[in-house]
Length: 115
Image (cartoon, rainbow, N blue to C red):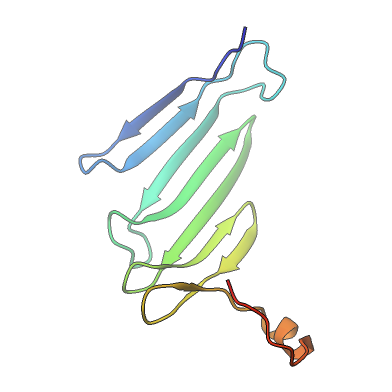
């Protein structure tokens, strides 16, 4: 018999998820405690619908993920589990992945595709 975790979310008046509790499953070896998340919107110049952070607490350990946006609403930076990713967008709204400066200096002149 497979047991699945249940989730208890709450929402604000404009349907942004505010909190989420993933309840532990009895007998599960994956988690010993409930996982609680608080979602944050509209901080640091973002709109009230743009997710700017998620605070997570599990077994007394607290972590935070953050998100930043440009004026057109594209995600420009996100920090997940302590790792920060910078994102660049072209004029048409397409995500452009660019290597870091250090990597660009060490690259050969052979052209490579950018995803």
